[in-house]
Amino acid sequence: MKVLVVGGGGREHAVCKKLKESKLVDTLLCAPGNAGIAQVATCVPGVKATDVEAIVKLAKDEKVDFVCVTPDDPLALGCVDALEKEGIPAFGPSAYAAQMESSKIFSKNLMKKYGIPTAESETFEDMDVALAYLDTKEAPIVIKADGLALGKGVIVAQTMDEAKEAVVDMMQGGKFGKSGARVLIEECMFGREVTVLCFCDGKTIVPMRASQDHKRVFDNDQGPNTGGMGAFAPSPLYTKEIAERAMNEIIVPTMNAMNAEGFTFKGVLYVGLMLTEKGPKVVEYNARFGDPETQVVLPLLDSDLMEIMMAVRNQTLSDLNIQWKKEYAACIVLASGGYPGKYEGGKVITGMDKAEAAGATVYHAGTKMADGEFVTAGGRVLGVTALGENLRAAVDSAYAAAKQIHFDGAHMRSDIGSKDC
Image (tube, rainbow, N blue to C red; front, top):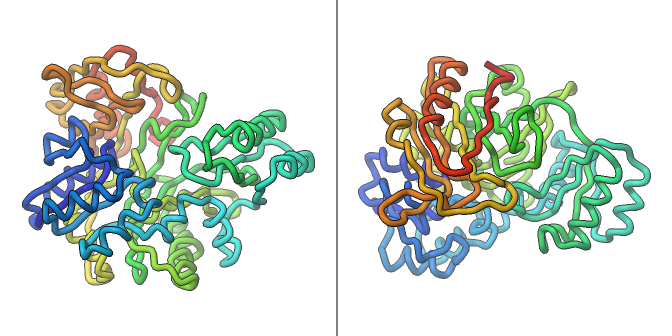
């Protein structure tokens, strides 16, 4: 098969590397890709992931057999719909189903209607009404932009002044553009967070290994939220009992709720959970593989990813017996200095060969080639993943490998997985 992967980050690199292992995949393309992905696939850097028309044209011109659409924006823009309309099989939800991620209000209303455990919340389209509502509440409290905001549209306000500032920044200041025109104000849930990525074909939903992401930029969960500074899997917090409860109360009911509303979700449903004293509750849904969760979950997959993607698209997921390695995986993200704020690109990267010689896999998130050298080209630059027989071993191996890599201003957290080792 000739397969096209849409996207160009660390998640796509992980997907491409796993697809490259498939006995079904002969040729692999990636648009736009990055310097690391170019080592396992033919990249088409001139085609942006958000240019749906260009993606469809590329798929037709290259006569691809299957397209995997991984990032949130093209899914929300209807890339899968456009491909399927042209008779090109594609992996990922429709634009309507992708609203589970692209509109927090959409997904919150669904949860409320079907009694899926989540935080209490109210929706606002008028800033003054939102500010008046805050006067009736106490901190900490959560402010969420309705739409997509690169993983940065959620503010956990520790004071009411901070909460009001967040509302004004979103609704009046345009901090997240149209994504912040409507906001969700939620109670602050307390507990530990776990991510459960699930393969879903609308009839069957199969959870992958549960993972834990680290969103804050600095150690001890300090500083602003990022797209993710590291992750590990499986999560020791996600016990057999909690997993069973999450499946019965959240994961299966979510799939059934979507079907009841008349839209079938086919793709990867990302379920972000808060493990509260009252049980697991939904923090958020995403409509695709998480990043960097994918970089620790897919290395543990012992089945053929291409076979799974085809089964999801064809609604035959129940026919598969998906297998997982018994090891643990940890990913350490190396970011540009200043991220998630302003940062400079073009910094020469060295030591990746040493990291891989140590047994790690280096996933490229924001890199490019310049004068024959790998250089930085994004906020999150690399994800260094290692496996181990237990979480401690995986974390130690990942850090040992990550410390072999250097570029000016490189920053990484030093406490990924430390609470659970």
